[in-house]
Length: 196
Image 1 (cartoon, rainbow, N blue to C red):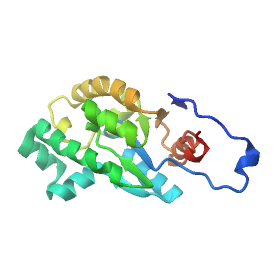
Image 2 (cartoon, rainbow, N blue to C red):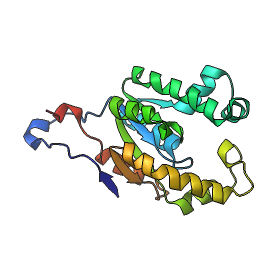
Image 3 (cartoon, rainbow, N blue to C red):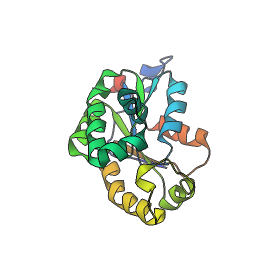
């Protein structure tokens, strides 16, 4: 199930005969940790012949440090500064599927940049499924607390409305079958060549 926040005009089938589908130059995936942004991003990029970009990997490459170490060294605020710097560079990628870190949308300036540079997709995942997926995860800095469930619940409640607001479209990733999620995502991508 997906919901679109914008209505895009359709073209008649006669104008689309033998024409391969066109997609936005940048497809940007946002959502909670554990929502499947990296996994789905790789699958989508391979399927449509795009480059896959993971902002967390860009940060690690640029800083020569792992995300948990950056949190420990710079704190969350310092990490968000680094993340915002990476956000500034994303418009240099063409024909790319970009998986963002879960907190990239927290700063209003990043929200605006992401919406302007590409088609933003919110991968919605119910809280109970996230809790199950992340139950044994020990790599996420923000979940290294005594009460992981309470922490994740708080993050979910505060971030979900932001993801929804910044996205052009939201899709449900509850299904365990990647092909179903991929098919749903492909159906909700606009064709820029059809826009007036």
